[in-house]
Amino acid sequence: MKCAICKNGETAGGKTTVTLERERTVLVIRGVPAEVCGNCGEAYVAETVTEELLQVAEQAVRSGVQVDVRDYMAA
Image (tube, rainbow, N blue to C red; front, side, top):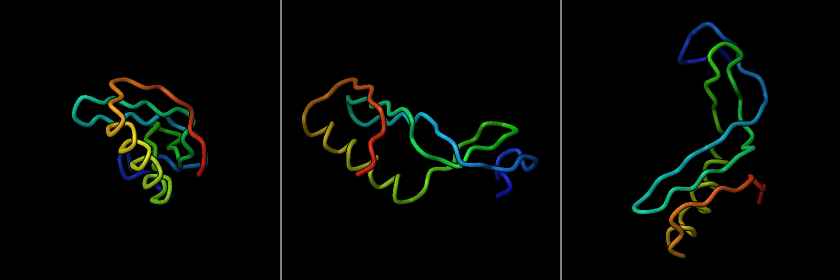
């Protein structure tokens, strides 16, 4: 697909790092599957993957995690 940010690049399958912050929790997830623009590097994460990431973040907040860095694991 054409990148919505730079309007010049095309996206291709790749991986990205997602950082989520809520209340006192910062969660960094590496290796998240995404469509990544070859021109500007903007990453587009699928809705199903986003739902998984938000569930992981919610669990981290509930358990009192302050900072966590982890690798993506599909559910």
